[in-house]
Length: 417
Image (cartoon, rainbow, N blue to C red; front, side, top):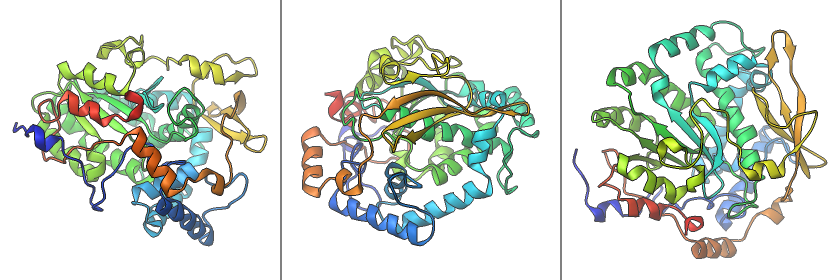
């Protein structure tokens, strides 16, 4: 495998727009440029004119969600509208809200075992950490899972175009955007605690996976990746791939075509001796599973190992002392000053809907004028806090030697200093 020089690997990544892209929290609430503020206003106006957005104290879509679509389309409101409207059509055609509300809890939990799992921990910026161990997607597990999707597992009706096995995946993305990210946003033990979390950090373990297994999973993973990119844009911060076999350069040739160049730039493939140094530049040792050199007692099939901050912010109700299995989401109450966690899903013919806990919000939503930051203040703050360095795109996977530990560490922003 050809390796690139240090000088090449340390260059800034320049996206196709020609502008140098900065990392979180740039482009997020409280860290918008004047241009980005104006784009958000125009985007809301456009969506309202098209009947896709209702403003108010509790708007139909919150600003963090709208900003995900704007970031995905480089803050061009018209382009963001196209993607947003397609997503709304898809959600309506497949009744995604009904799917999440009524999915069989056992079916939901079975899906969780085949996709990235939340560890219950967050990285140094407060972004939730997921682990995905590909080796569990063997032919037997996948066949059993696909067979289970042939039976009714929710009350949602579909457009018949999207396979049921992929629709169940969308329930997990709903959990990310409606439960894990809002919960992470309410944890204030992080830099920029007033800025909502809309991203995820992923450790993808591909050890003990054969080329045949990758080939068998190719179509499914490609479809899943493309649908997620289309309908849940800008929910990914980093992917750290570990345990890569010698043949992975072949697999990388497939994978890189599934994503746009900016997404590819977020994928880092690490050799064994680089795993811990790189991960600790983004995560505290206590939040890294022991399997990867950290201190966290957590294995892939374990439930989330919640940290002390989650326990601090949650006020349990109705006899709950922990989050139950199955789908959960947060919704605002008391004019947005608090959030309540609702457990949904179904068991047999019975739907579940009960309050699990509440959170008093540290930073209740304000008006757009109050939450958006001026160009000067935002750019000055980002400069003082440090900017993120991006690596030049390559046709080869980014491995040790192409991106050194020091260069990866430079990718982390101020909170890792």
